[in-house]
Length: 145
Image (tube, rainbow, N blue to C red):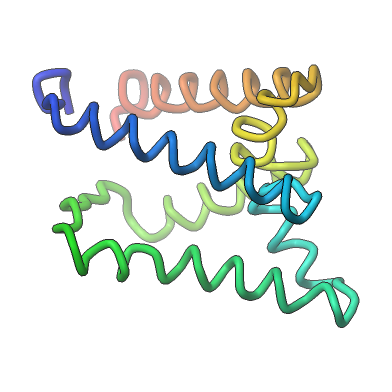
């Protein structure tokens, strides 16, 4: 992918997508008093109290249903995955390990934490970004995957 792949429509879609994520995160904290960190919501489901499970399940089901609802009005973008199954499993495990060490994921730290001015979230998001940049550089340019 290069910069010529991005069109004016892609920037507009990105802008509106970002606005929707921001509005949803703000509504979630204002209406529920909770941070919309996906890893915390999913991880909390495994050990949640009985009354705390239903909202977590509904939140996750809503996330999974959203592409299907989106495609009612718009075409879904084409998705190309250039990794094999083993690479995807390793990547998933590394992301899970990272969110455990960081006490949160990019949605919790990057969207919700930074907007609240959390120094811990700023540090975690910078670490996520640098790890991603280094990984892409190593795998694409040095190793050649």
